Image 1: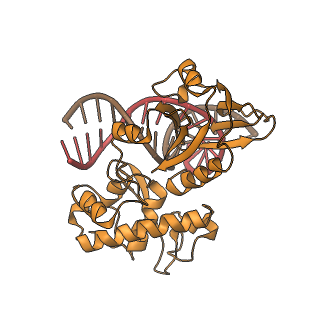
Image 2 (image 1 turned 60 degrees about the vertical axis):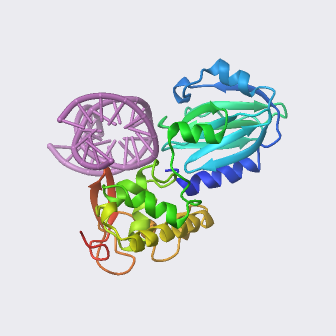
Image 3 (image 1 turned 90 degrees about the vertical axis):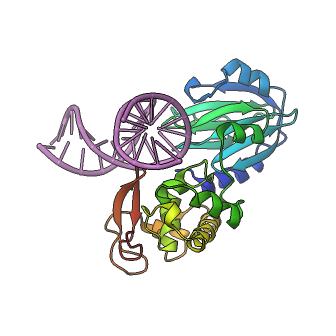
Length: 262
DNA sequence: AGGACGCCCTGTTCGC
DNA sequence: TGCGAACAGGGCGTCC
């Protein structure tokens, strides 16, 4: 499930593969993934252009165009992007293919179609239009604490709210709360600034650790619950077993012993 | 403002 | 064995 670390890895990957290539054709295989733009318009926005920068904000990617403007890309749950040097063996979940003059292709694949592609004048314009909060890796402790503490809802729901901070999904929110020993259903507004500061620090550490591990959970440090996030799995600190509960409409895994209920 | 749903979508897993 | 229900999950919309 692409969250900030996976999207950052995709950003680096695209940066290393598609910059500077001349776009010759956009082939929309499934219009369902286009958001507020049609295939023809997207085609005319892109053809003849080149990508000059790949920018990430939270879980959102922006492929900046030489002539200004950018293609936006969101991976939803199952989305991925890859560059193919030669002809690609077609996959039934390929949703959009961008051909380059140099013969390569950028393929956007998305099994469950929760992903989205659109066009924006700038990343900033898109971020404002969607009212996304600051990026989880960029936000200062001060701003994060202020924003998060102002919400009277479970801390888990606050971390998942992209308007508060952008980039955290269900899995990493569990890890951040486990690392800080905070129960997922404690109200954000009930946490002291000091503890919320700890959540901020853990958020940065967890996201960076996952990027460093190339998002391979097996390579995460010992003591990370994402190495085995399931009900009944042993607590990484040896304090019993993990438990599942629904918070803010999502399944949260936590350690009842390390993260005492409010 | 926030909670509780429902919907989108499809592959997997579970229960009968 | 086989079928359908439940589930997962990000984001958005609706109603209370």
